[in-house]
Figure 1 (cartoon, helix red, strand yellow):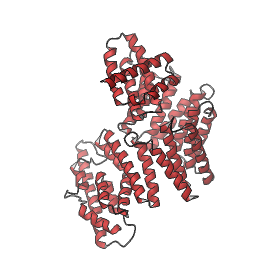
Figure 2 (cartoon, rainbow, N blue to C red):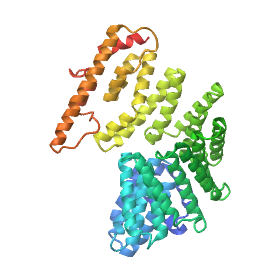
Figure 3 (cartoon, helix red, strand yellow):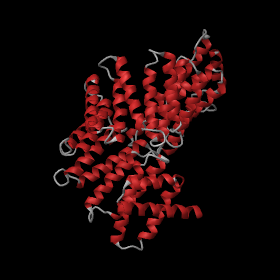
Figure 4 (cartoon, rainbow, N blue to C red):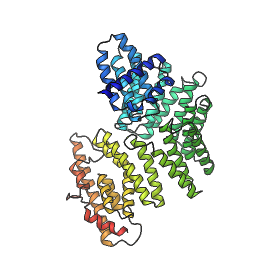
Length: 513
């Protein structure tokens, strides 16, 4: 109870600070930094409860005044570089949901549109929940904002939302990837019709930075030319985003430019990698672990990738550099807090050790990656999404099983094969080369071939069942639900269907040593 009162007092102090400073981050952020321990999930509920209780006793004008401060808080906490990023995003969403209750579309259309844009931004960067669903919610809110923010009536706000919507399409998971990227580029170019270098140079530089990223991901067109266009846009952004005037934005673009050089096709490969590393190191002049831990971790991961590419040139030294950078990133990327980034970095580190034959180190990294996968699954909102998360990390499971086999940790190999609950892993176990040395007895190969054929037979049966279901108007399943009998028949050792039982798998694995 005492802690709740302390958090409420802190929340009110923050809102007062915002009101007094007109939302100045240089005033508000030190207050937040001094009270990081109070920024937890509980304060999200405290905000909601306080608004529900207090607003009922306020007149409409007072509600609007306080709501303005809450909106500023939502925007500030979203950009706050410290604390638990996942909690910060939930708090930001809660703030904008308060505004949504106060600013309705009929009476306050401009404020309502602003709130829709803010909610979209928060969902776009949300860590918890289903990533694909968060992005769909973000796109929906941006499109709602554009019902009011038209080019004719509110051109600058229209351009801001076009820029934000473009980024959501760039990151979108659902739909056709190539088409989403084309929509993204189109929205960025629309924003540039209003936000020109002459009239709005800061906004122009922001769009140039974002447009560059879209070109770097672009699928259509010539890959080499797309990367050249990306580099050109980043360099344009840096004409405005100088280290002296906009150090944080400068660091962001340096990091992004480094990525583009890392994957550049034209020019000398070694020189491109040197440029990439130099840009990352420039970004780290601003992105310090103390001040910008998330951005610091991101840059460490990216720098590790660049060093990894240089291993061919100076193997031992660059290998150690790459490992050190990945490990640094994982000091911040924890599976329970930032699972998507943790998965990416831990997988990269695991793959590096795997390729070097460092089996136990690979196991350690892959285990961390799987913890991140399982955390993401707990936040997923549907069984299909949960299965898709597993499918997206199937190589992690496979490499972990392989590493356990190579260290004769057969029980753990079976454990992770079962934990994946994935038909695709069974297919990999049945078709990939699990045997690093030695002749494989024909009866063992026959067992694996039988498993493979059983998997394919079961897949055909399930496809036929889904097709039959569709003819009756039932929705088509794009992934097997791990809780259905069909899925259990593939992964459950006690099921008489496609039975990858312990005895048969152990028999197969004995021949890997």
